[in-house]
Length: 262
Image 1 (cartoon, one colour):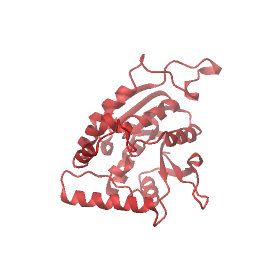
Image 2 (cartoon, rainbow, N blue to C red):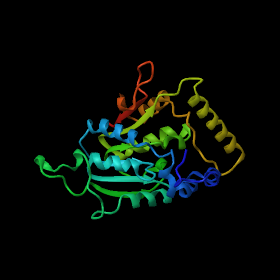
Image 3 (cartoon, rainbow, N blue to C red):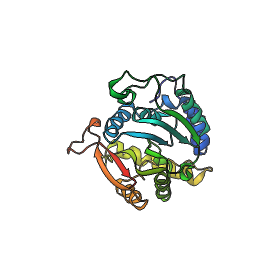
Image 4 (cartoon, one colour):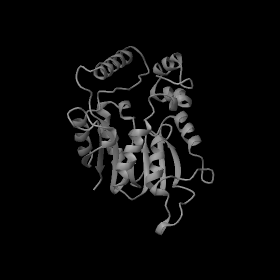
């Protein structure tokens, strides 16, 4: 599953027996060489779909990790992008991937075009990094767009509404919170049993060992997610991510959740 640059089995075991924060501090230098990083095809599909919802001035990557979502926001936002995470190690890797102004490469795509068809600008939006817990975001309503990739399994079901409320409070009126959500695997499939087995092993680990490492794949169910977003004040719609394919019954393999603060 891993490249030669990725973590060893021993390193993964040490991470799994740590807290979430310390575990990701340990994993951060090799995180982008693991399957846990959001695949580029998912990032590209979300970018293409969200671009139709813009334009956007400011963007927030919630639980940014090593900055994959910040890379998406730099293509969509004109003014400022902020990545927030509680792992100092992940933020250090993200900062290295997106150097300060004057050292950054040019942005690709429509966000880089100058006014009235002028040549592309050399720099994208300003990028800032904030170390904070997503359950207590330190922002006023300042963002037009918020997104998150691959982080929701680290929150217990009881914490989800509070997380969504924090994002809601960080968005300006009309701001949008977007994230992809995959269709559940068919019951009895290999993927179904793999996720069930992983969650069961994680529950046993957390019952026997402290600190807990919260990472569950089967607790982020679409119906519950839509209910919590609505309770937090969002108006929600779903958009199919057709670039990621369809299941045998014709339904999309993944959808984009678009939650709007009105």
